[in-house]
Image 1 (cartoon, rainbow, N blue to C red):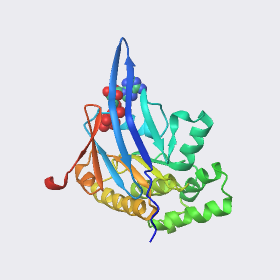
Image 2: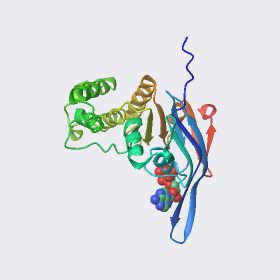
Image 3: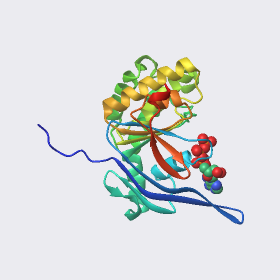
Length: 236
Ligand SMILES: Nc1ncnc2c1ncn2[C@@H]1O[C@H](COP(=O)(O)OP(=O)(O)OP(=O)(O)O)[C@@H](O)[C@H]1O
């Protein structure tokens, strides 16, 4: 039996974030604590303006917290140089956005290959991995198509593959099915959860859709600048 203890992928410790708005300083996050484990899909919910995107940006090392610690895969991000943070972000973190932001002049395959080339993977290995990822979300036959030749759901599944291209430990998603019709949203959501489980990544997924949130492993709500673990199961 493997007795290796499972290590958390993400730890947030008393994270705060304030913004200056004119003369005023507003504090959006007042003390966020959270731990995410491998293979967990965690919903991030809360009303508009609560601070979900701010928290995703901080967790994705796109901005710094005002105070507190962000620890990814055991690395305390405040102790890293800018170059080390960039490397950690590219290697360990994948992003999926509401508007997929695929490169329009490249095929679905190339969109999934490019992040791997940036990290130094050979073209051949990157191609193979991209084709496997696309096949895993039912897009084997669409690999050579450009985004404009794909449906909204196909584009979003391509974006999920791009987010997973470098086999990140942590996947951050901001309303990943937000711009899709209900049927397509359901299909993309299932593929997303399936691929998270299979790849053993930890995923933090901001959503306004409480039905989808209730089907994830955990639900974290931003409430008065902190994260509260809630259960949506009874309301289903
Ligand atoms: N760069 C910034 N400068 C000043 N204020 C900001 C900045 N970024 C975010 N805010 C403020 O922080 C608050 C939280 O914004 P955020 O986008 O994180 O909310 P959200 O929960 O993601 O909302 P939504 O669900 O509408 O996307 C808002 O009041 C917003 O105006």
